[in-house]
Length: 350
Image 1 (cartoon, rainbow, N blue to C red):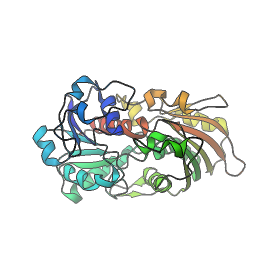
Image 2: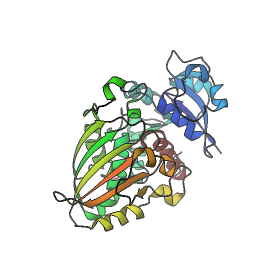
Image 3: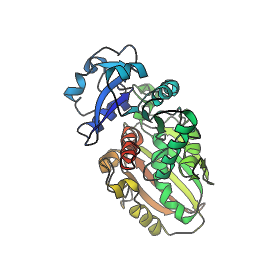
């Protein structure tokens, strides 16, 4: 049985990625497209300016957009879950309203740090899905909210998880983040051409606090944050897609670069063991070339769902340093949500 899904914020770039990834999906069928009042009542092809390189699916283009509210969605279709690509500034109350009746898998930042809301990376912390029952009991909802982390946090946390076996103590990360991470139209051309912008609002805080929740310990009722020191510095660079991060870690054990590479290569999680439809065969791909990973060449590895690591080497100040690359609008956005929902199906939550 294919589950019927709504996409909230369907006309935006992340909403478009959801549509692209869900085309022909074996488990999910797009049944409702929800957006702002100015788009409601229009055909999707008239309401949306398609920004992706793929073609807008013809059947999606003919669908009528509804307003993003519980009443409008229920009138349109009896759905099984909603994917939220809403802006963080408006997502909070809208997602709560819909979660009273339906599961919401959200890319928005509004509820990520709520004590009873999972902040999920399926390969890293699937046990935190246990927060859903805590949330339902506490809030009295039939549905629930589960969130996906910030795009730059996702790829970092995936690479940090296998390093925890060496006793992860400190992390310093400097990001070089793609323009698409700012949404459309993003950064003005005269600001970014021949330039790097060394500030992205709230990005450093998201990496630092979200990572501690993701890598923390779930005790059955709450998540105890990981005891790791994380320091982040975030930069916007003139790349369309693909965040590149320079990562420096201090480890209690003193593994060789080869041992760290083996830990990356051997890392798998629940999605791989369960063979979920969107799961990459390898969550982490290690490149041996001295000048990789590079966004243009490596961002689409694993269909954009793998994190690519390279230049693993000793660090004279800490222990190990490396670079990691992730596709910020696939693994870092819509793909993360779809994979989370697939895990929920496999676990009997949906």
